[in-house]
Image (cartoon, rainbow, N blue to C red):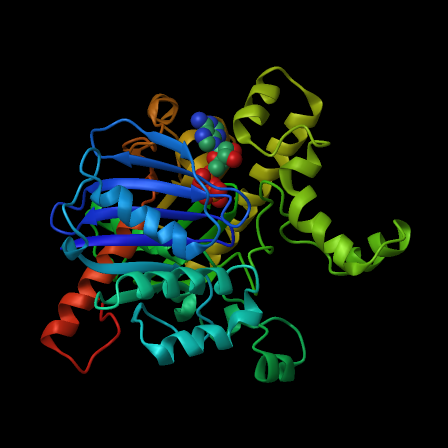
Length: 411
Ligand code: ADP
């Protein structure tokens, strides 16, 4: 079955067409600046990237362009729309309602809408993509895959904040966690690579990208994660602040004579390694270069980022009551030997030994980077959220054909 995976934001739409049998991406692409002017890139498997400026007034047009590119007689990869067996949509927030991927119907759309206040920037944009696809492909089954779903196994002690309990009951204010599709994919893959049963393994997964989060996975379940009600909590990120004393918000508001909304803008867009480095850069490629040249601003940001990751790993080893493996993934985790070294070298107290040579050569490939006699294994495992979405979509559509009454993935 060929599965179209859609990741729809407010002004962009990323897509991949994946063959569920070979698990290969047959084509991938991106529509950008939707509603502004518009540009599109499309890369067929084994082909060159095709980029063009094209008017994209809305998401419906973006979906039309995706279909036109996929079926184009010259560079397309399918001969007609009929070949698309299902569509998998990335949905950022599933609240407590969605603990697993789900076949989309009118009720599901209604429920995703109902939790949109928890992710006002993301869920409405995700739903625009769902609606545009349903319009273009009314008879094709669609599946919603939630960033939050993997973390729904967290126990109450991990997801509750120390706030009045009534705020949780009335408003759903609690830790939800994000990047769940990545944490799930990578933790399953780690168990496979370590030749351990997923139900027995204790892992800490470090998803270090522009957005960054860590999760503790124990006996096949996520038991804690660093992002919270929103993706602002936890690690220091590219431009996001991560954990702070909540009083900081009011102090900045008073000292800078501005409104809470302005402070929130700073916490989301001007903080993280970008703010810490005195606006040197939010990109680790630049920061690493600065670090190697002993630039003070870059060094401060890199060291502080790594220290916070280290601290979370330590606390999650305690939460997991032990550890078999640590995994690094996403842009920085997959590509930065420096960041991995600065973190892993300080984990010797757990019996962890870094294989420096393996670490230096592991860039964007699956690789064990701990020594053979390291008590805890450390891995680099590239994430593949699109493939994880395609797998869930296939499982559900295939399963639903045989069991029409069921509409969620059973693990
Ligand atoms: P997101 O999906 O959250 O936007 P990614 O997982 O794509 O983030 O990670 C993007 C980040 O990865 C970049 O901002 C950059 O800091 C980092 N990165 C990418 N390639 C490299 C590299 N070769 N070396 C160091 N860092 C890198």
